[in-house]
Length: 278
Ligand SMILES: Nc1ncnc2c1ncn2[C@@H]1O[C@H](COP(=O)(O)OP(=O)(O)OP(=O)(O)O)[C@@H](O)[C@H]1O
Ligand SMILES: [Mg+2]
Image 1 (cartoon, rainbow, N blue to C red):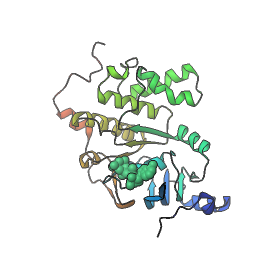
Image 2: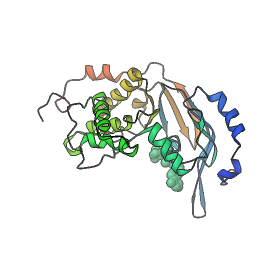
Image 3: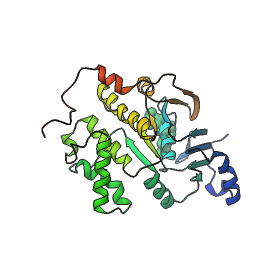
């Protein structure tokens, strides 16, 4: 039985061991090594991850799939330093982050991780540019620097003409692009997205995937996203499938779909043009 909570102290290794075990993974962006996650709810233990080992190299684009409850979000939360493994190790850019304190994790999260959520999570009554500036505020960046970098991020996702729109003045796809700009603004090592197209119609989903493909292919940004939709997974370069807290399949996509080409073949619509009068 593995439904046992093992404290972090029990598994802590000393510095020497940490370095020697980190060395083989030095070129990897992310290494999960036999990661378990056990949630405790009263007397119940839920074994959400059961020994997940995963290696992600810089520049990859990974889609994470699997049935509801299979552990996808649990793993994303660990990758994003929102939560810690119960057992096993997590190396981010060679650093063992599995045993860091909450404050240290928060610091790494602010500097190295960009998050995109299904529900966008933008602040209402706050302009696009101010939403995108937020992570920089936490990092203590000056106002002029924040404006410069937030503008650059919004331009990267094609929203250079929408800096001062409020979320309710933007389409769903545009709101998600603001969220992607916000995830980008601290120049993270990886962008993690949990069902980023879950609330979007199919055309808008392709637009959002176009942004992710552009960032990955043209800007070299590493992307890992969770999706329930096999069609969406085909825009990634690699697919990892979860089942019952374990990785069941891990394969390269033969010929990934191109969102750009598909958008070009669709009839034009008028809701998403930056040339619009505001
Ligand atoms: N904070 C928590 N406390 C207790 N149990 C949790 C918690 N978060 C997740 N779980 C449980 O862990 C298991 C894995 O959940 P997880 O959210 O990772 O699944 P998922 O693959 O993301 O599912 P979905 O596709 O529905 O989003 C489930 O059994 C879930 O009920
Ligand atoms: Mg989930």
